[in-house]
Image (cartoon, rainbow, N blue to C red; front, side, top):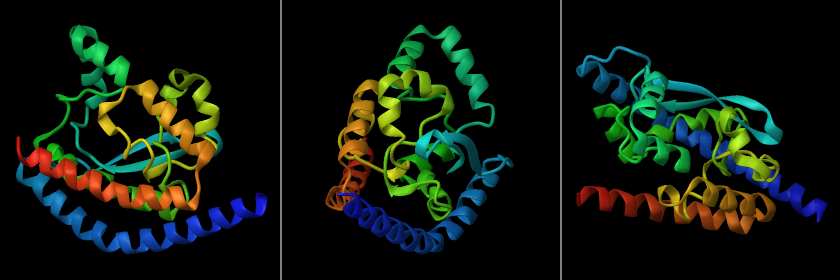
Length: 213
């Protein structure tokens, strides 16, 4: 069993390196295009969003995404939680807001096209993350994760994962934790391959449904 796991993690790392090197080809021109789009709208701030996240064995790492929110997003969220009871309840239940007022116009386009996740290629190359894994949780979410925390941190966070292809935004925070606990305790090469291909179907389906709105 131990040797089988070692082979699994070795194959996974090799694939992660190959995938992230290929991904750099798409990341560089994406950076240029997104920067131009932000400049056109008068936003001269950094296009990257850098934040501490919980990694393998509970070790924090610097997490990269394209910025899709206003630079003072945390202050805006704090004000929302104080003044809007409905959004506050939604956030406490799901740890996110469906129609988040903190998202910029360019940011909404970036999110709808899933381009915001692209800089995580750098995290994969640095071995902070894997292509397939659990969501990289915020340090402040550790307490909310409860007993699920110890199972979830047994695997590296991923660019996509079991939760993303089995519910994504349609499940509560606790349901997401259960899905990710299951992945950590049952991950395998076969499971990762299934998640990899199912991710494309989920992204395409999501793009089509958003295009119909």
